[in-house]
Image (cartoon, rainbow over all chains, first blue to last red; front, side):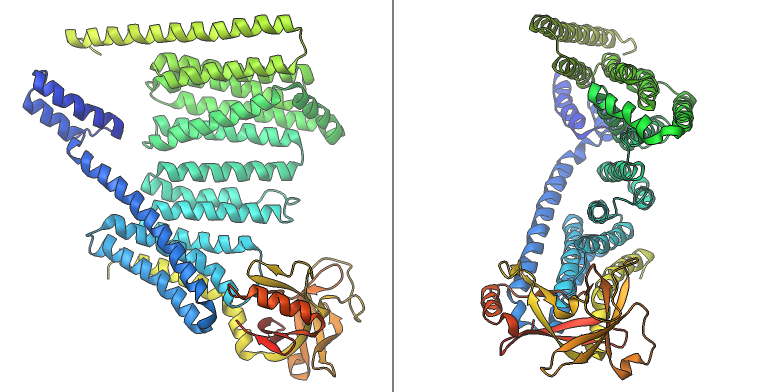
Amino acid sequence: MGTERKATRRFRSALQEELRLWRAEGIVSDDQAKTLERRYALGELAAEGTSLLMTVIYTIGALLIAGGVISFIAAHWTFIPKPAKVALLLAAMIGAHGSGYWLWRVRGSKPKLGHALVILGTLIFGANIGLMAQIFHIESHYYNGFLAWSLGAAAVAYALGSAPNAVIAIATSFIWYCGWKSDYHFEHALSLYPPLIAACGLPFIYWRKAGFTYLLLALAVSISFLMDVGAATDSFQGWMLGGAALALLLTAYGAWHRVVHPLPEIGVVSLWLGGIALATFAYLLSFGEMAHSLTREIWRHYGDQADLFLIVGAFCVVAMAGLSFAILSAMESWRDPVLRRYSLPLMAGMALFLLAVSGWTGQMATVFLANLACLALGVGLIWSGVAAERRSLFWLGAAFFALLILSRFLEYRTGLMLKAVAFLACGAGVIYGGIKFEGYLRVRRAARALRSTEGGPA
Amino acid sequence: MTRKHWLFLLAVLVQTAILAVVPASRIHTLMTGRTIFLKTAPVDPYDIMAGYYVTLRYEIGNLSKVPGYSNEGVEGPVYIFLTEGSDGAWQATRVDKKKPAADAASKGVFIQGTRTWNGALYGIERYYIPEGKGQEIEEALRKHRNETRVEVRVDSSGHAALVSLHIGSKVYEY
């Protein structure tokens, strides 16, 4: 079949089970069953399961061996002369890399074990950096070793297309950044780390289509960007604006990948991260104290430049909203039901949040706008959950609403009677909404099943 | 060899090169440097050992009374000229912010440091020791607090590298 569909392992396992029954009950012929087996590569499921298990076992084994090698060398440190120590460390690293490469790429007989040995080689390389410093009594900031480790891991990741090596490279580079930033660099303005790590990591992600590696990269870029913005602007508002820009960028990037570019893994991760960023920042600003800090800070910090800041802020609102709308509306296809329903409330939430962050409307309006942004996000989740018949989105939206309501009632001093009534009403509302949603799901699924047995379009 | 083999070989070479760069300067100093002895003491007499190393404070780490020293201006490298004392330990005689001329090393010994609020750090403040030796060295340091010296090599650029720790009459070299 030319049109190979990407299906999850869970779906394929369930299909394999069902197919056995359908065949026995005569629902599908042997030929049809074989076609489906080919299409979803069901014959490879057993091997894939074993392969995953072997990868986990080999990786754990590699980690344990790395610990053993380093402890063995450390235990005999006193008796080994310096040149022999260096030779031993290099031999352990090159030996692990060489044997791994041989098994994985040259002989190809044990690719999983070979890959695990290459990972072991990179782990030994990291330990060797520290041991070299010990042998020659070198004193340096601990994080510099992580930077060197990151460079070496990145070289192997690109040479072999190894995602675990890329994960090591991203994680160690982020440790370096955190150490470097906290060690007297907080007063510095924006650093080059977020764009550099993105520029170094993204080609690998596109090449290997590595979803988990992308998640780590996106987190490293996002967190470092927020740390940088916080340090550079030295203001709560600047940090909030940075959060808004980050949420918007991730969402637009995710939407683009979801619909236009054939990398759904990146699309899903980006959309989730963008949504989480917006929800977190809007939720923080929905508290009166936070809004008070933000509005007070504007006039204290910017003084005469407040007008300029407002103009820049307004420009950001228009540019960001316009950019996102252009990206989303330019998509030739709106067939993705989740994205279609999620996009508009999300855009509304973004716009409301940006307006709130600008702070020019005063504390009360800022709180109001931030709450509205949260509400829009909750509506988006529930609406797309209903449209796509996905419980997870619906309940996430409902839980976000519940959190918002709970926070407001805990924040504001109202009479206990009023609180009791409100909580009862909200709880009943959530339960009622859930029951209605489950009923809706049952009706929709029954109707679809009926249509498919009658031979109509599903 | 195919292109893929070369790529992997290159990656392993990158890792090896990084490992070589880490101690390169120290190895050069150890091979070409002149041996001097510096008076030292552990930083905290109540907590001498910090894991598997001793953090050392040098007599030449405090430069507040040495001619030429000033803690004003931006932090950066400083060059400390040393002369051998009657007890065999080397002492700071002058501080300069400018790097000495190329032939200065032939006339005397100078060491490069990074300026601190009252002196300088030389990148040799940490001496790693093997597992199981901590207690022995800790006891020796407590007993011979004023008789502790460090053997250091200093090359013609002023870079220093630790060689051994001399506590009383015992020499510890790891």
